[in-house]
Amino acid sequence: MASSVGPSRARKVTLRDVAQLAGVSVATASKALNGRDEVSEETRRRVTEVAERLAFTPNTLAQSILAGRSGTVGLLTNDLDGRFSLPILMGAEDAFGAGQMSVFLCDAREDAIREQHHLKALLGRRVDGLIVVGSKTDPRPPLGSKVPVPVVYAYAPSTDPADSSVVVDNVRAGRAAVEHLLATGRRHVAHVSGDVSYSAARDRAAGAGAALAEAGLDHVGPVRYGSWSEAWGRAAVAALLDADEPVDAVVCGSDQIARGVLDALRDRGVRVPDDVAVVGFDNWEPMISGSRPGLTSVDMRFQDMGRRAAERLFAALDGSDHPGVEAIEPRLVVRGSTVPEA
Image 1 (spheres, rainbow, N blue to C red):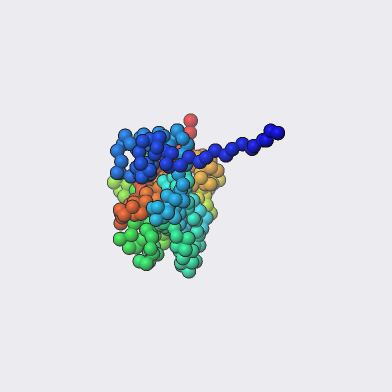
Image 2 (cartoon, rainbow, N blue to C red; image 1 turned 60 degrees about the vertical axis):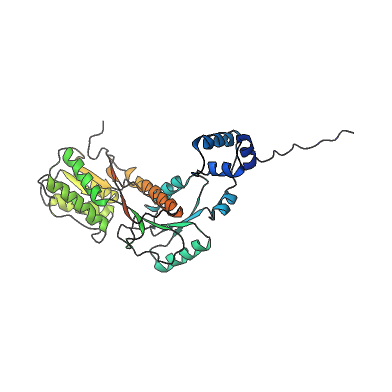
């Protein structure tokens, strides 16, 4: 009587299989696959080729145990709408590598008590490190000296110079906006910004003012500070036009303000960019996507910020701390609000 047997399950390829086929010890194979310096490039190449050929998948749990790490990182944010924290998270995950580290995201909602609660919860999960994201660029108090894991601050720097922080260069961003406008022939530049209590608003105005001064120019009227809203953009530019001063460009403290400025200019029959050019900040997709014409904006490169924060955290985990503040240089994205679209 014939008997039938179900399909046999393929045996999982082990590190020992890779080591044997590559002609090295298990320890050497492990070092080669984990990027350790103790092996030659030739050995590393040979082990890597064998691992790829065998479709070897490392046991990440075992790797974490051997390394004394959990393979998790906490991202603690005070950015309520995810405007800054989500791109920063995406950049951090890119740097951590797919499947290499898991990220726990917690929103403290600008509440110090909630922040401490989330901190305790993340430490209870034995995260290997923390990235702390602020809701604005003003320096913030550190989490404290008793946090047992490395911490990197992103967007809002720590007030402690011994901490590691990655921030945007808002002064350079303001300068870039005005330099672009001057390069397109504009000479009568107004500035409508957000809440003056935010260092981002003041820093962007400082950079813009410096670029104008170097060209022998000044703002049209004072810098108009208000709220970070479309409504403020509409109201501010209406007052600007009613002042009956020549204006051929408006620097807006954010993309939201710029959207309001564009609406008000259109309502007044002012052509953009023919009569007045408009520049925003942040290159924020929800604002950019509905803008007509397309809004020229200074991209603060939040994903790059997250990537750098993750790289700094990796370095700290490896015992190579980098205290101090690193500023990410912004980049200008030119669209139809400053240069006529073809």
